[in-house]
Amino acid sequence: MRPARALIDLQALRHNYRLARQHAGAKALAVIKADAYGHGAVRVAEALQGEADGYAVACIEEALELRAAGIQGPILLLEGFFEADELELIVEHDLWCVVHALWQVEAIERAALGKPLNLWLKLDSGMHRVGLFPAEYPAAYQRLLTSGKAAQITLMTHFARADELDCPRSEEQLAVFQAATQGLNAPTSLNNSPALLGWPQIKSDWVRPGIMLYGATPFDRPQPLADQLRAVMTLESKVINLRELPAGEPVGYGATYITERPSRIGVVAMGYADGYPRHAPTGTPVIIDGQRSRLLGRVSMDMLCVDLTHLPQAGLGSRVEFWGPNLSASEVAAQAGAIPYQLFCNLKRVPRLYADD
Image (cartoon, rainbow, N blue to C red; front, side, top):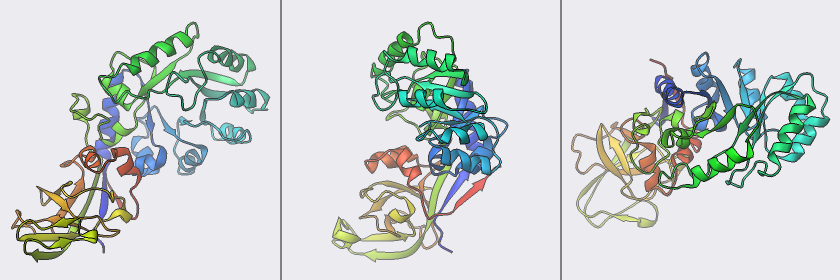
């Protein structure tokens, strides 16, 4: 059996959730959109059942998958609904819903609902992606309140640059949010992972930890709280072939790496079809039998090459860790011109194996 696999540590997941909730001093929605960032939404939700205050997904398809698997408790649709006829399903499956556009407000007003909805009204405080503009926000809130269609309204926004610890943009967005919501008596939700970790002065009633749940830092530097996160996913495989080459020999497609000295090359069953980044360059770190080494040459669809020259004990069957507790996904992503979100979400083909002890 091909040795490439992703090990998912559910104890580490719970540790990271608890860290988020405790540090925030608020309720926390576990963000498990995009198949829990590649970790498996159903298994992640099951691991947090009875502990998470709720879950957040992108769309109704993701929510229905969780409900079909027996997941109870609040599930928030972060993109809201795309068509008015989804409101019937939202009521039927007891989902919470973000409202980020006036047409959604109008659709809710017109709808004949079986019961009022739990709505999260999103403000565009400066990211300029989705959300109501500040000038229209208070009126939209009042419309939903007086419609009788809202059981609860939560006031929310999303920070665009909270991962930049020296950037004032988050505090500027906070000021816009505070001005737009002045006088509105409702719970709030502002903090994504970087805001929760890096901006303790920003408080809200609900937080939305995403990338931090999976043990990856959103920052490009050490940060005390982020340094306490534990890696949830370990992507690993084994050396399946060896090559001993003299100096001056090319390795892999395009001869992008030429051996600089007599070298031992390990061929590993891992490639971009598994989700490993194709553009990871020579020098990208890997861990081989617990020792640090590097990628050599271009990543292929199913295989890649690593340097064993300085590791005489390594050979056929040696374990190779591509990211995990011994090598952060953030470091690998930086080498590959990517972000850890991308690495996790791109995972495919490799089996996921879950550990809960």
